[in-house]
Image (cartoon, rainbow, N blue to C red):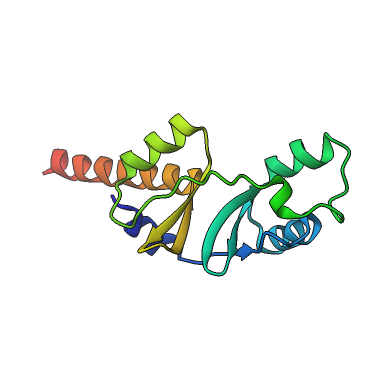
Length: 141
């Protein structure tokens, strides 16, 4: 299974903010969209990613104000990405070794989607269900 197949199943919605957005405004968008991380894009260029974990560790635990702190101050600027043609195994390996939960999908430098660890797990479960159904039908014949 490829990243393209995962996005075809889940959709290609990409929510983003700019690096000059306040953390508070970013959290409002994340809450409205029911997402755990949001991409930081300035002038169509992927600059970083902001997660709920970043907020908890870099704002709450450091007693900062989310209304006075800008996203660029706490975002993760090292962003690992994948391509539409990458396979599920490559995504799992990257997420596991880098200990990340979200992978933006780029094609020709443009963000075309994002996949999460939940999307990867769901895809694995779907593959396993298909295999079980195939084996059951094979045995029944």
